Image (tube, rainbow, N blue to C red):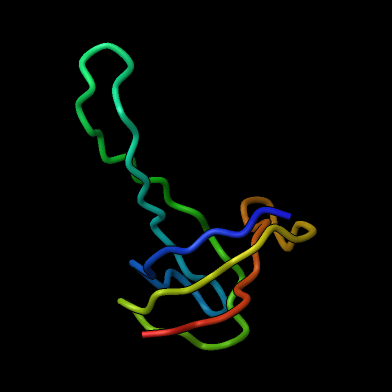
Length: 75
């Protein structure tokens, strides 16, 4: 099961939040650190706010684009 940690950046509709997951990779040739950000639509039954850090995991599809559910929320 995939589990990610990210920051809530928007709440487009009821029971849906958009979470940005940031990871750092190293370029194979130049050894420079690159920041990569990916955004996920996550099903929210907890009721989180913008700016909260959340853990979310893969689940069965809730809708066309929502395939993730929030496991826990923090500040």
